[in-house]
Length: 55
Image 1: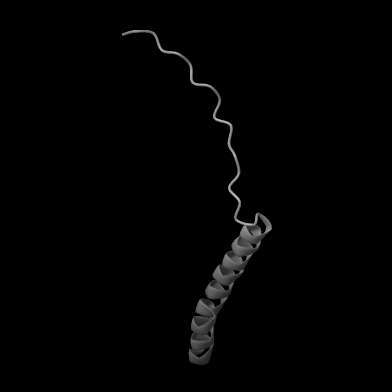
Image 2: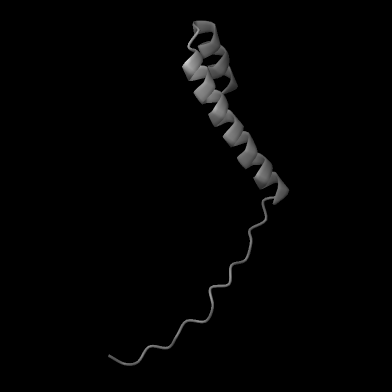
């Protein structure tokens, strides 16, 4: 994505540069959040399923 930003800047497409920078910032933030979790899955309590009556 960084190479694309450099290319777009060279072409002078300022609107495109801004959009790519926003996307890059979002991707970097997502990677930071993943790193903080150390890639460990978190457990989710789904509860105990309710018994169904015979149909």
